[in-house]
Image (cartoon, helix red, strand yellow):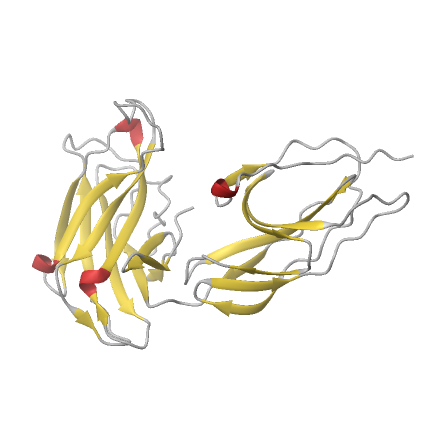
Length: 286
């Protein structure tokens, strides 16, 4: 009788949005067939409704208990972000970021069996109330400064108060050095309306002295506005930004979540995030 191994991934509810590492697989074949790739039934700014062809037992004997499904965002070999679970073959994912591309796959689990993950489907969620345009001005990602241009566009149906908008460019501070000099070289709406602050993520329960020198620290440059209103369809125009260390030492941007290689043209970079009144309206930094 063929060995049926169970692959179990335990995820606390509070950590459901964090990456999950699946255990290394043995040489035995999956006991469940691979579910179909997810298809989109409904696409809204903050949620997706997905459907897929179910998995079945791949021969005899069959296992006991219902087949459940993990909806995953693959991040690498045997590593994924868990988006949701269900025993049905449809699921509505909520709390997603608008205007953001997700690669989504489905895997089946059951007592006594598991399946491979399906091929991933790339889905871009519908735009929210605003989007961020991005253009990289720096053709060398390892020199001593970061240079790019941002532009906020109102994609909603009502006027957008810029004082409620928060944009974050996400990066990784090398060597635990979280200091940056932030400069706005030029802004179509006026440099006096643009504010920049630097921040970094502090894990819960972190002892004093964080970040530890020599470590890499996830952080961001935050852009806010003192005033201004955008009519539907209107934009701020270009906002040209530049950052460097006080020491003018080199910065490697290539592992920064929001960095894209210079291409000389505008793009909607969905690894830059935008919130309106504290609600995510564009982008996801994972």
